Image (cartoon, rainbow, N blue to C red):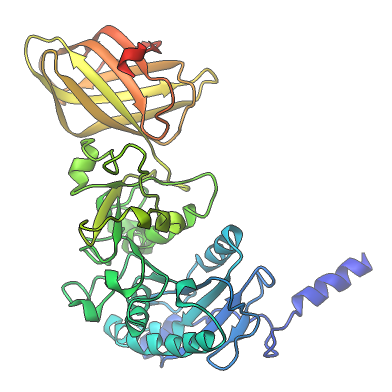
Length: 451
C-alpha cells in the first residue's frame, strides 16, 4: 500500500520539460469576460507518451513533439464565460486512441474570453500568426505540411483557415466544426475558411440558423439533420444556456462519435436535405462500388473520390439520433399499392428481433403519394440496427383527426438495408392497412429475382 501511495504521488507530480506541473487549459471567470482579456496563446502537447499530462511548448521549444508523425492542432472558439471547453479531454483521448500522433491544444482563452463577440473575432488572425511561428519551427525540424491537421471549432475553424492561407493551402487537412457565422457570413474567401486552405477541408454545419456559418466552406460539407435544429437540444429558451449552445456544440460531439469504433456515421451527397429525406441521394457515386462518405475523423478517406469536374464543394446530408453516439441506420421501405384511388399519407414502421429488441421510424416529413401499381420508396431511419428482423409492423396515417378511416391496400412491401446491402431483403404481400391501426406481421425472404 505504501508503494502504491508513493507511485501515485510521483504521478501527480509529473512535470513537463519546462518545469510546470501538468499545464492545464486557462480557467477564467465571467468577471474576466466582462472586463475583457488580452490575447495570450498557450500550446499544450499531448502524445501517447503523455496522454493525460500536457507539456507546454512554444515557437522555440518543441518538447516531446515527434516531427515524423501527424500533428493535430485543436483550436477552440469564442468563450463568453471564460470556462474551458468541456470536450477537450475527450477529444485528446479520442485522437490518441485512433492514431499515434501529436495533439496540440491551442489555448487562446485569454483573448477569446469576452462578452463582446467582435473583440474575440478580431483576434483570430493574431492567433493564426502565433500558430504559423510554431509550425515554421516544426518545418525547420523536418515536419511535412502533409502531416499538419487542424481541427477548428467555431471561430477556431476560421483561425485554421487563416493558417492554411499562410501556407498557400498546402496543409494536409482542416476540419471545421460548425465554423462561426456571425461576422463571417457573406465574407470573401480571404476573410474566412475556404476549401483552398488545405489539401482537404471537411466541415460539419450543425447550427446554420444561429451561431454557425450557413453556406459550404469545404471540399465536403456535412449537414446533420439539415444543419438546423439538432434532436435532443432544447427548443425553447426555458432550456437555459443549452438552448443557445447545444446545436452549435453538436458538431464537436458528432466528430467525437467518429473516434469510437461502434459508430460510423454515413452521409449522403445531395443537393438538399429534402431530397435526402425523400431517398433521392442514396447512391454516392456513379459506380456501385464507390463508398459513401463518413463523418468526422475518417472523412478524408473519401477525398480520392472527389473527381475532376465535380463541384468544388460537395454537400452531404444525414440524420442523427438525439443521444450519443448519434448513429442512424438507413433502410428503404418499398411499397406497391392496389387502391383504386390515390392515397396520401405517412408510414410508421417498427422492427423487432427474436430477442425482443424494437426500433421505430416515423416517415412523416411530408406525405407520400400512393398510386395503383406504382412503387413508392420511403427512406426509413432507425436508431438501432437489428441484424435479424423477426417481425415488422406498419401504421398508415393521413393525418386526419376526424372523418372516415382510409385503407391502404398493399400489393407488396419490401425492406432493404442501405448500410448492409448484402443482407437478405424482406417482403410481405397482400396487406390491408386500416388508418391509424398497427398491423403486425412476420416478413419472408424476397424472391431472388427482386434482389
